[in-house]
Amino acid sequence: MVYHSITFNDPHSETRFMHKRLTAILIPLLLSCISAISASAQPAVITTIKPLQFIATAVMDGVATPDIVIPSSQSPHHYILRPSDIRKISNAELVLWVGPQMETYLTGLMSQLVGQTILIEAAALPGITLHDADQNAAQHVHEESDNHGLYDPHVWLDTRNAVLIAQRLYENLIVLDPANSARYEQNNARFANGIRLLDDRLRKDIVALSDGRYALYHNGIQYFEKQFGLLHQFVLVPDHEIQPGIRHLLALRGLLEARPLTCLLEDVNANEATINTVFRDYPVNRTRIDTMGDAIAPDQYAYVRLLENMALALRHCLGR
Image 1 (cartoon, rainbow, N blue to C red):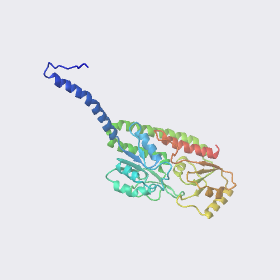
Image 2: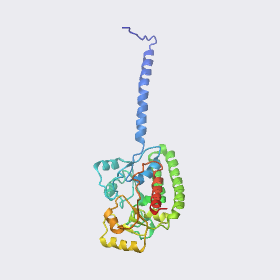
Image 3: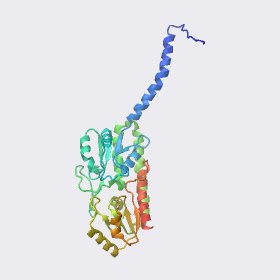
């Protein structure tokens, strides 16, 4: 066995050698630590439902991926928080939710997080368009952040609301994460411009459907209808919490015979027996309209696809 020795003629050469060795070892370690710190510095953002996650994903594209509380397979109206959900929400730096009219089960937890976490309540944003839960009630604009009323919580189905939500999220993100402020600004501007183009496309496509006669299983698309000039004939289940009585369903059967229609737009919770009571032996196209984006993967274009898919479902149902 041959042994090699290193001789240091310069009294300081050994010190310089050790410094080089330490530098070679420490620099990669420092770089990995910096990378870890940078990754952890990304803002922890969580949304309650997929449509809000779509909006947040568009604003945060290229920086971080927002988390979500409610799986797409679960109803946001009846979800029961798990301990892991509570931990995720409590550890988030920013929480984006619709409001107590949609996520009633979150009201208590949200009140505990005031002052600790940035909370964006979409339905309480200044200038947000709200429609009353009563499908025949007039539209109003929300002005008082502490006066929620009985509004329809499907606020994301009006694209103007989506732009407002994205804008508020952007304003908070540039404070939480100033290092990526330029990216957030670019993403927010791109989202707003994409929505303007989407509105133009939808208005051109939907104008040909405005005279279509259709019914709704549940009145969950009135924001979409009112924005684009659509009008349904009747609703099978006015309140998703209460199964309609036989008198109501038979009255709809009589209305159907007097004013025929061609299309029924259903949602994921549609009850077959309820539908058959009204539409038995009646030829009607039945199409599911997805207001939550269950089959859509979250990316920068997911919100646009959500609205486009709704227009396609209506077109398919009406046979246009």
